[in-house]
Image (cartoon, rainbow, N blue to C red):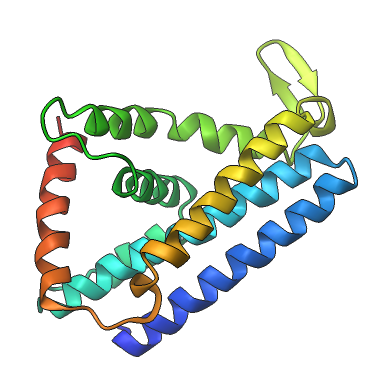
Length: 193
């Protein structure tokens, strides 16, 4: 069991570490180490994805809900759980479409690619065999792909800092609790459909 204060500290450390991973990704990019630059930017995104997971737990604590701490820790360490979290973060920062629900469709589509994103990260680290080809990471990644991941991660970090900084260290308000519950219900329906 964790206190709200410990969870806030964990959010701050995750956000700081995401920034450091991105800085190191840029160093590798400048040294033409594109596969590793991609991977570190991807890992920075996974680290950033912890913030919404932690915040959701803090919100549930605010509502006096029971917390499954084992499940919480599993989500913080599970790569695909963090990728689902960042998909939710992207959804929250996307243009909301209350009429056609195209934003929910984009979110659902992003969820469908999670295994591929995780595979791509692994291909940036390990040599292997994929689609009838033996490879090493440096043969699979170019500057364009690495730069895309770097820019995507930079955008996510800036968005969290400018729009959602309260997730990191602010108190959870009653309005925050109500909004989170409503969004959770909508997205749970999407994921279970």
